[in-house]
Length: 321
Image (cartoon, rainbow, N blue to C red; front, top):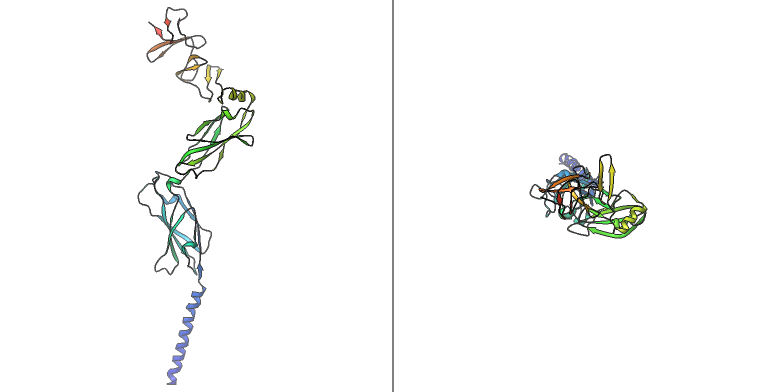
């Protein structure tokens, strides 16, 4: 019997030593008690549902982001969509997940649920999250400009229904904040003092006015005393101006534009401008099948005979046969 007892004791001791290894290894594994993820998504309404538009980052070395997938059905994002994704996290060697839903912290997304994948000994965690709704998304302004005529304009921002505009004289906001629907605004009425001016604009979400983008500023424009006086006397609109170059006369409007291939009323008189914007003079102008005559100064003749001819134009300037 002793002969069998010793081997039995040795075997029992061996088993104890082997079993002792596993608790030691298990004890060496560390718990992951919290997860922190930063989610960036740049999807747009009408675009394909592409994972490339989603980026997920973590600063932890206890786990890695191995995969993620879009759970929404369909091929393109619609304005009514709330993007939902599932993210796969894998624990690093000698780590395992042991946490509650309140231990999952997301920046840029809303937590839905977390599931430890079966058969993986809690080393794989599947987190489902919602990204900002497509309706709540708001793009950034790419540029804002201001010219010497008081015209402020800016690029359109995706998801914006309105824009907030402020005029800045030196470092002081004048006139408060204006809200407009379009992508331009004449602010000459706030530029009646000679000084340097800029405008700053930010988009406002069309579905939720509490969602606003960042302010974007224009370059500075200097308004001299002459232009400031024009703004003041003309209710904020700079007067147009006749200009002449080697090609002839043309009229620059208050917004800097000029008329081409059309008539324009300037100072109570009608003038016709050609395809390049130059004023026509001493010639007949055919418009909609009717003839009109512009004199030496370019103004349309009315109620008179065309000089040197027997042709008469009536009170509207039309040639009377």
